[in-house]
Picture 1: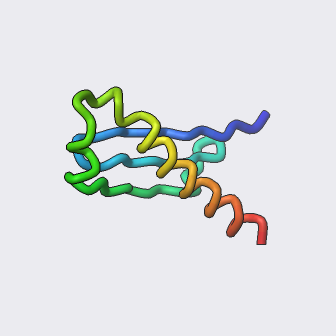
Picture 2: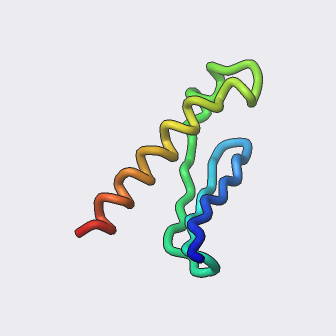
Picture 3: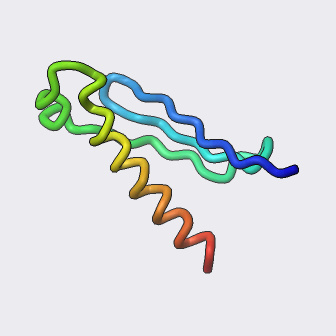
Length: 68
């Protein structure tokens, strides 16, 4: 059986992600967030949608390049 794993590490000013096929790392990215963008939110939990959208952009681009 094959597994694809998405690991997400949200930090104070960046979000790090990695994608694995079983134990093999196939993607690793660090997304830096502008302080001005983060200051719009009172709580870290409120940043969820913004960070999710950034992650989805990277994953969609990665899937596009992997399919070529």
